[in-house]
Image 1 (tube, rainbow, N blue to C red):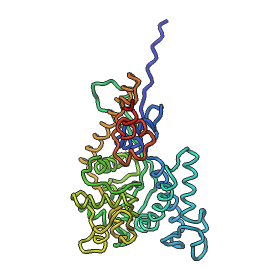
Image 2: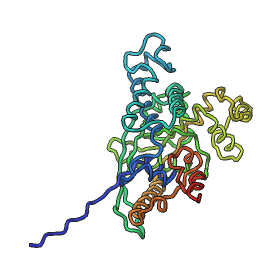
Image 3: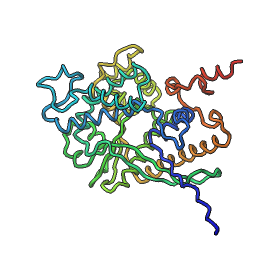
Image 4: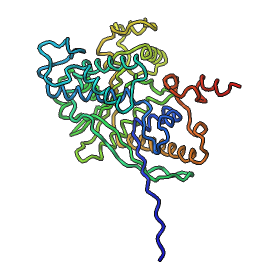
Length: 385
């Protein structure tokens, strides 16, 4: 009796849109080292702050849903500062929301890079809740909605281990009903209507959060376009869910713009000088004077809330054409990543396969810069006799 040959296992690698695809674009070699020896790639490079931010905002939104009438914004940063009694729902304050998420991440082996990074994250998420929350929370229809879909991998000259891949992510969903009913001074609703002039009929708007600054337009690292591709792909994933309405727009929230530090201010000044930023201070305003006179070490506490919110909110219209273009971009990213996996398996050389293409900020925060061939520190060490 002749037995049939067992067919090889059908592999469908799973890619997180932000944790895998955008991390690969940020730096292929750093991504590979963080991924360890697991195939397919699964561990994000920029991990802790993003998950800390999403988790704390979700807990805060759930609290707001149950207690919005009793505890309006702004919320105190500590329990002792609450007026009119401590909330019934625990944890009692923003700090304890953040503590719960931080402890959960610690159990998963994820921690802030340093104490300064941790303190900055706590400060920024507090400001996001108190200053962005009043505009955002009343609009949310569904928080932390998981979206997932499968795509074919483009054909090429190198045989791969798979023919398709799974891509997934997490978004917040806003609907036309809440956007239409909200007060006229809601900056998010105003921003959506300004960016999408032909809104009509039932629609949705999707939201994601970035623990970073607003990128420069057509920046050399590609972060401006990466944000567009990300939201367009999220829109496609959302459209595959049975309860979805047509997605009219996506919103990226750049949390660091709510409390800009030296890095954000230097990027803003460079963007104004080189005409590479789209949100400028009003001519003749105090914001313009603060930005023009700012030097490293100066405070940014006097920047107006309106200016900081406008810098933090980026609305991207969604169209079938723009979505198709973004999907093709990420299909090509997956193709390149899978080709790197094949090449490493053949030559057994990580450094010679995965591209070290991180920018200065990525390299400065990278644990692997000491032996990276593109890092100043690593290059000197490798070339030393």
